[in-house]
Amino acid sequence: MKTTLLTRTVAGLVAGAGAGLAAYAYVHAGGDATAVDFVVDNVARPGGQLFLSLLFMLVLPLMFSALVLGVSELGDVATLGRVGARTLLYTALVTLIAVVLGLVVIHVVEPGASFDAGVREALIRDAGAKVRDIAGSRHAMSGVDMVLGIVPRNVLRAAADDQFLCVMFFAVLLGIGLVLAPTPATAAFRATIQGLNELVVRLVGLVARLTPYAVACLLFALCARFGWELLVTLGRFVLTVVLALGLHMFVVLPLWVRFAGRMPVGTFLRGSREAILTAFSTASSAATLPTTLKVAEENLGLPSRIARFVLTIGASANHHGTALFEGLATLFIAQCFGVTLDLGQQALLIGVCIVASLGTAGVPAGSMPVIAMILGYLGVPPEGIGLILGVDRFLDMCRTALNVTGDLATAVVVARREAVAGGKTNRDDGTDPIGELAHATRK
Image (cartoon, rainbow, N blue to C red):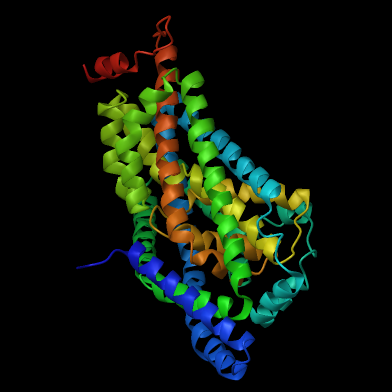
């Protein structure tokens, strides 16, 4: 019987953590620490680092190609007018709320602040010379310096120096240029970028197949050195992420749909249920898109032209859950390593998460290369991504469900605003006849 990637990842998590805890107990019971250190240093850590290096290798081409395509696809804004403008405005606004909510929750709970100072320093030492180099320049740049440094003088040099935010800025400008210059030559260039993106997304999928083995290696190395304390901290991190995602999914979005979209919360959640469950099971917004379109038109009664535009754009650019998770995970890892981000850096983090969500691949594990990029840019050890890798698959499923729910909520609100603009008003009981709008549009 063929097992799913989730099942294999959970098996790798249990096996790696179990073996690591057994090795930790063995050493503290007077066993041979040298043998355990040999396995950690020569087998477990290299295996985990190889996986992380493969992810880091794909960061630049993934971010560049996805951002160029994501921005260029917004060219439909020129033809759809206010529909496109509203979609962009609502996406940016609600994504901003999601990221801020995630940062507030992580600051209140502080799951990474419970790390023992000795354990934290040992983690930094284990990460190697690269981490020490980053740690030595953690406060070298202020938030203002980072903002001014977004515009690169030399894009190739910025890419070589891992200044990915500069590359992201250039990618956004390139996407805008493709919208403004719709010629055969630029169409050919966009097709090339599309091909690059498809190749990189495929490679991310192939690398993701190694996740169970990487999880086993990384958790063995961590648990063999640090024991139960690390697992307890990861458990608090998972609960923190689920809490933040749940607040946005079951409080913020329903309130938005009810008051801005004039649709009863029960109607929205029941109608969206099939798409939400599909998103949770596949952990892929792209794979869920056909189901999302189906429930939007058939269950929620949204006009086809609005549903197709908003949801297609949303599958690549409207990632509430992804943006929330990226900001929250960055601060968690920063807490674990004792790195303090000032207000300017956290404000920049919010902006980066919003923009980076445009370039996050709608496939499982698509957030991990983005988080690695954000960590490095903010002066937090990028290798810290290994701390959350073991639990990311489940959290990926949760945030993908939120992504799709956010897409549908945006479509509902845009449809409602279009109905008002077209002269259609709500009934007195507050149940907006969006189904009638859909029927009128199809006619």
